[in-house]
Length: 199
Image (cartoon, rainbow, N blue to C red; front, side, top):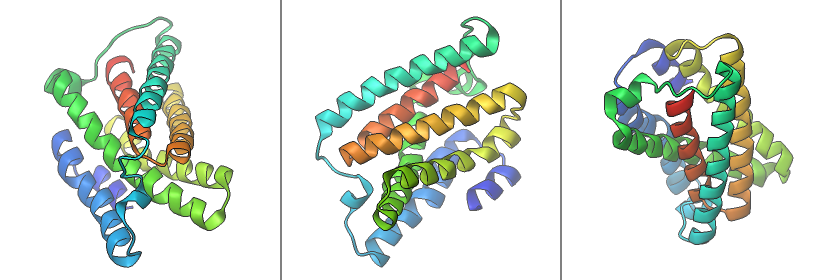
């Protein structure tokens, strides 16, 4: 709710959103809750060096698949592959946008997979339920930017909802299988960069 209100009422630079506001809204409360209230360590959020190489390979592989999905979505949207970089790419350049993408992916995956998905799974003991519920919450998290900042509508909006849902489900399953945020973060970065370049 805080993030939705912020996105609706404030239009600060993307660097402020991703490096300051999003961590304050998503990361700090989760870390505080896990460390102080639950009195658990950060491995329960997928912040671990366990399975690093597996997570790296899986994340890069699935990230590439999501990049291909983005290119296919571009072809569906425009009737051909048309590279039309978003203003953020032109404003910040590729390296800064990549760093922004990592910051975004870290904050969103820590909240959605590391915290929400893992806690819902612990309570429900149901992988389908935890995957779907955390994915619905992940998609809802994106509504403010899609309809207010980006002002998407029609088929483009539907396409974003569908691809965000697929991304959320895939990342939930990747997190479940690796117990690490590395693979979901890498997939998320690939997806964000694909959106920046092709959609």
